[in-house]
Image (cartoon, rainbow, N blue to C red; front, side, top):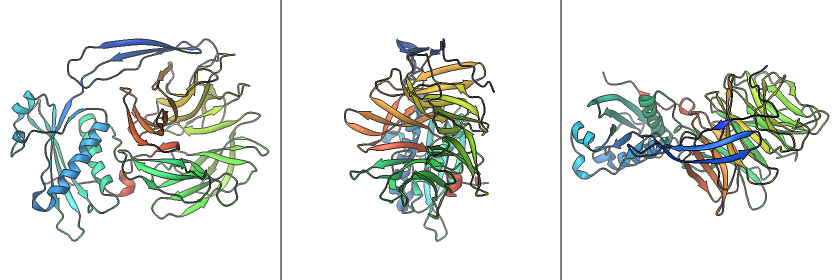
Length: 471
């Protein structure tokens, strides 16, 4: 297998990071800097590009849903802003709010898109609502798309997620691509007593929830492909690291059989949903193994030996696996890619003998063409988030962070954003970076968090979505 023909010596790669601005007509190149990673030439080229202005017209809700309409409008406006695809105009002067859409006026104000909406109560006894949205193309002076979305009552635990469905649909209408609003991030949090429990938080920073209470070390969560289950490592009960799976709806839990001695860590689901891969350290044979959840059978050795192969991650098609390993004979891990069934591994991270660096925690993008990981250039220093392009034609490497310490990246379902653990002067928290522009936003601040994992879209698993259009 020769997916990547990278070699330990002599790699020369040009890095270009494009920074997109938020204003029309801004000029192209602003600054260019240089950095040095062994074996890789990194150049940061900052450019500005037009963000289309999207105006959010005040949503209407009549006498019984006016407050709810404003809340929904705010949720959607924030989702669109966090998508890093628009200049969102949601502070609309009163004189522009009224019946009908004056396309010429909005065009003069610089809007490219205009979103209008209304909320009405369902006619049944469910207590839910219907959200009606219209996306207007200001340039063409016409309605581009319209849709109706079923919302549960405002007290329902999935109310905000149902609104996020509408936000992701807007991204689909305009760009034909997946959004990330209907997703959550799982992570472990270390408490003052030294224990770690699992938590989740929505993509917009809301609904911070604890999902385990074991009073022990629980870490490395990973989502099933349909978002209905989470697998993780915990020392609960036996005090030995073992892999568990939790059904998020039923709260039922099962444990993966420990057929070999050693610590079972860093689980990841195969995209087929039937198998799980993980690392076993110590014992009589270390390395990466896989196990079939569906048949509850068959621990299969994939790779390993005298070295440590850790943190496996599958390509979206399930054909390849990336992982970090110290198999080059130094204590400093590097990132490799191999066939998912095992075999020859190709080096992905930059490497020159004697100037090894340290690279670990890979995560494969849902689009299949990028691999994120964190690393440091020298043997000492702070970690930064890196993205390697995976292709037959060669390798391109991008450095996404430069400030503070940054670890454990995980891709959003839109294959554009990454969540990671960031440490700054004020402490540690979860941060999100837009890989297209380099823009970073704070998601969760002031908590000792570890190893975040972004879920797939939860739209199907939550059973919320759009309604048929009016005839």
